[in-house]
Amino acid sequence: MASPALVEDATLHPRNTYEYRQNEVAEQAFMDAYGRGRLHHAWLLCGPQGLGKATFAYRAARFLMGRARDPSLGLMGISSQDPDAKLIAAQSHPDLLAIEREANDSGKLKKNISVEAIREVGTFFSKAPSRSPYRVAIIDSVDDLNINSANALLKILEEPPERGILFLVSHSPGKLLATIRSRCRRLTFAPWQDEAVRAFIEPDVDVRGDDLARLISMAKGSPGKALKLWQDKALDMDDLAARILSSSPPPRAELIRYATEFKTSSARSDGAKKFSLFMDMLCEQVRERALSSHPYGRAKQWADLWARLSTVTAETEAVNLDRGEYFWALCRDIREIA
Image (cartoon, rainbow, N blue to C red; front, side):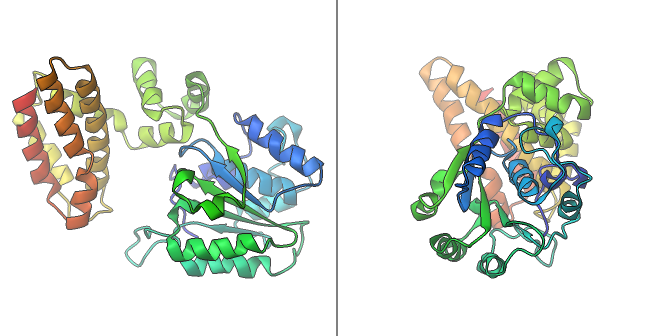
């Protein structure tokens, strides 16, 4: 199924990630359960996006299916040359099912994972493994279920499959049905330390010094988010937000250029993505000003602006507002406060 991968390069998809640098605690917990012969049928992988939860799920799947152990790749390390690992990488392993949001006819990812997709998991688990000790299903992410697909998943969890293991990736487990959470073994993935994020992303990004430090700070402990922000040129949008909020805003010609870039009709366009990223950067900087401003009246102005900005991206997509015009209006409003 089509994947909303953190990084567009397919080689960086979790199914193709063999080395694991962090969250050894989660792997040890899984290995302990495996070693005792008490492997739970459903594992809820919790934590902010970009921490390696899906990577863990694919590593666990390779461990359960593969045979070519490679200790240099960590506790659950399996060589990329293992026959089962190759099938997983090719998305053709008969005992692995990966469920993610699919694209609609226009190429845009659907809002939810459908009930039909989850029922496919039930059908998948009704069959015995064909070449491995287990059948494994990965749902990335379970946050994308609607009420119907969530109830379909609950039915599967209530009737645990024999020789079947289910990995549920969740970025916001508190929003899941309590009955789903209660039927899973939970593993929590913690944000990485800044130095660990730096070591992970530095070989793949072309920024250094203060810009690299800024990128790491924006990512808030998520290496996947850091790579995505770099790929999307978040530093440029952060610079634009800072200049608009400063006492020396960009010249009119430059603002016109950005307004033109943002003003596109498609919610999937580069302009829409840039606008959304710009709004994220602007919101964060306005929030910081609201928290640090004195006196109270000025702080309230920034706080009111922050509250308004926090819903802009969703509103412009929902009612197809002109992002270019909104950008212009926003610049005018900010000049009255800055």
